[in-house]
Image 1 (cartoon, each protein chain N blue to C red):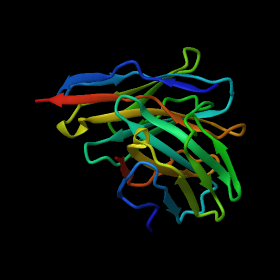
Image 2 (cartoon, chains in turn red, blue):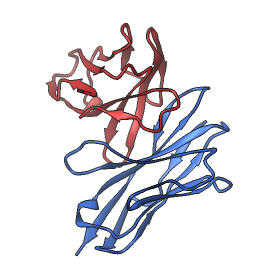
Image 3 (tube, rainbow over the protein chains, first blue to last red):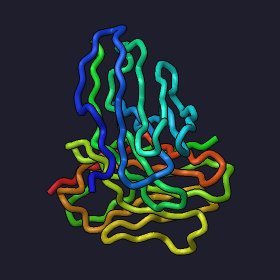
Image 4 (cartoon, rainbow over the protein chains, first blue to last red):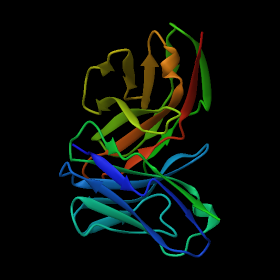
Length: 112
Length: 115
């Protein structure tokens, strides 16, 4: 059972380039979340989804877009990367009423 | 609005001693869940313990227990008999059920266990 898988694990982008981070879960979870982790700031919620075809903004949504076309996948897009988006990105998933949220292994993104 | 506050950026504890990591939260929702996660230096997020807002008993999982004080809106993590392997970042999180389903985190506490 793979759980939550993030692709890629590492990436270096030049300022202005675009990219998409993929989060895939095989647990049939309704809820999926994207976070960024920066030193001293914990995990900050970027966007989240409560089901296929629905997305909502989190605490720090600017500069990011998301899509949830299939229940198992949650994509995070950076249209024009900026150095301020250098961070570690985590995806998580869970179901309603669950006592645990499951995390991917993280993606380390550097924008130069 | 939901908010999680962890006021201890760093904590030290001697091996075999107990330590309490503080977490306070704010929400207007009546139904919510509180989580603690551990993040070792390798970076993965490891689930430790969960407490539901309607649970009358404090949650326990092995050496971990959650001191839940609903009126004070606090959900402190107690680690008993600390081990060197407990050295890590610890995050408190909250998920309000039903209305928003957001899962939000605090800024974390770095725990260092020394011999």
